[in-house]
Length: 135
Image (cartoon, rainbow, N blue to C red; front, side, top):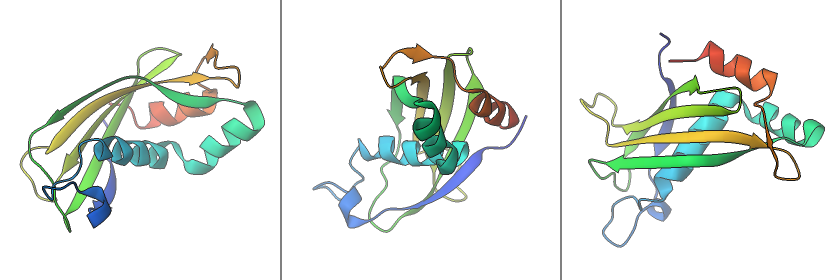
């Protein structure tokens, strides 16, 4: 088993709501950013420009345990597993450094589509990258 892929995160004023806590939908943005880091931004651009393949969220589920607030420094941890040749499942969580439990946990399932929005298998380069960092 490999370790989590970790992306550091700082919470800014723009991330918070009226109560001063991170607005719940922003965790989807943080998870997206972490997945992009794991898969490689350059490869994602290449796949779209050269092969016309992009990623879409098939299913998403989030659980919230503890709010984050302005100025917090956190980590987004990601583990990924190939569910099939067509779907990758990302298990993601937000942690305080040194924390004993995740503040937010999520499972995001991604599939790939072509420029016509038709389902296509995950590209070989992506499957290889996922296998290198699988659960």
